[in-house]
Length: 292
Picture 1 (cartoon, rainbow, N blue to C red):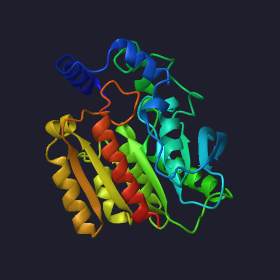
Picture 2: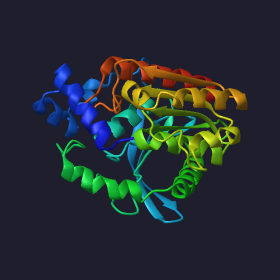
Picture 3: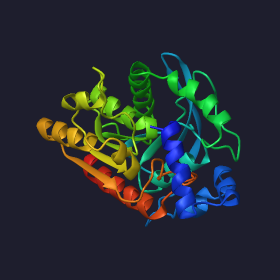
């Protein structure tokens, strides 16, 4: 979970490793570097893309919808990390669509803010930015996660480019890794595969901890864990493994060596290209199996 601790760990990591220069990070945060970093998939499909408004019980969520131009395809929801919808996640969504999926990248903060909540060049490293983001994060709840997921799936199932007879997928990053699990538990007959990348709060002491929902799921899962998240909670992966095994569900659970919390989005200060590409390849393998 993105917080003061993970930010301090990121700062320490960048000092030791050299990390992204301030200039390079500014370019990535502005979105200019995202397309150059993410390679095209093999046999990339031509896609259509655009902004859409999705009706929910709480209003209209502004989202980015991208899909192959021809045919019907399995639906996927992408929940972005704490910094919300932005060019990096649009690029990730487009790349997934080029791989053959109908993808909805959502704005988790639509109740409070439309569009991007950060200006070009802003980052979680700035205390003022964190002060703006935390109330937005705290405005969400397990209940809103479920109602939003149901609304997003209903929207996708109405689209002519979506094959509603195929299972759907959900991916979540940082705080939204748990959203993927909650969505799979709420819609077990619809969600066939989920991916959590450096997900926070998957195992807690709360009565509604995401790991306690695993018996309600039917989805195959990919749980990609940051090395420093594992250092801070080394038992979480074991609890998850035991829960998935007890439920008889397929789950790939792995700590990504050398990868810090937030390593997957290409505009992250701790972006780890090699491990991000590896996680991406495992997601495609998961979807090939779970969304068939």
